[in-house]
Length: 403
Image 1 (cartoon, rainbow, N blue to C red):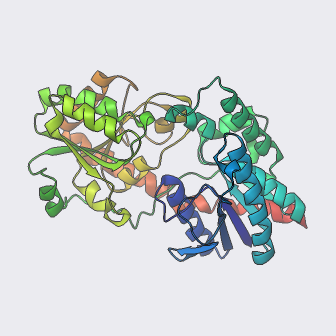
Image 2: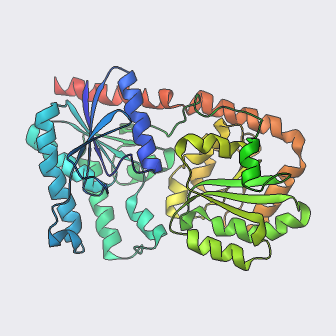
């Protein structure tokens, strides 16, 4: 089976989107399928029409340089137009049997148009609803024309695609509410390579010393610093945590839009000297940073995005044998069973967060059960091997329909 993946961006850019793509490509090839990959003009930094990264050849859609690409609305139309043109070229070169387009809907629409011209079936995969992401990033409002237009385009693509996949049950319900039969929506959840993330109880001592964390119990976060992640709530809760657990430190690994605001908040707090910003780290070093953390804290705010979409990072933490403390938004509740694989607290409530953290730190007898159950959940339900195998039924049905 030959599959052409249509993507927003990819490695060498680092994001959950890019890493999910890599995992899918690797596992699909392990199943004996042939994959090709194309990115839209939204992938930044490309200078050639082809680029080999991590053993995969990515066909790039380079910006045309036209002034249109810098104008509101017209810039999005330019992305679609450029991707259609490039898709038709790549289809002629790699001769795929299926187009597998991944969010956002700009990719889906381009794939639908190119697919109809070349009589190829199109699978559309929803990883997130990008109109809701724009609201949470502060670049759009839920009642704006831009939000409504983006939502309408997403719905159009969902209804026209030959098959629809998504990453979690929350999004599956949202897609069904837009007129796609629930039974026709396949869930391909995020997963973890359990060989890469091993449960180890030994912290990296050299790293611990270099970060100034000797003798501390470390609460950590690894990921992108977006507003919806609620990291400001973690810093707000820290003084209350320190009242009962004065040896606690917070380690924030990553970066993003909120980094400046978080640094200013930490400086203004009486607990600011207990917060360590490690910055972005190489992906291959992530395991070492997990090892120095007693518990990972995910204080996501309540919003449409966080209610519907499951994050990837808690799975990595559970695979690493770390304790997990998270807000009770829908995306977390789909992954974390309160008191069994992790601990949930009330979203948006700094006191609830602090109490959940301190109670957990004081009850060491609970740790082995939480850690072992979390690891087992990942091994049994959230490996990339198990997740990607679900594409067999999706692609198989399209191949049968084409005969």
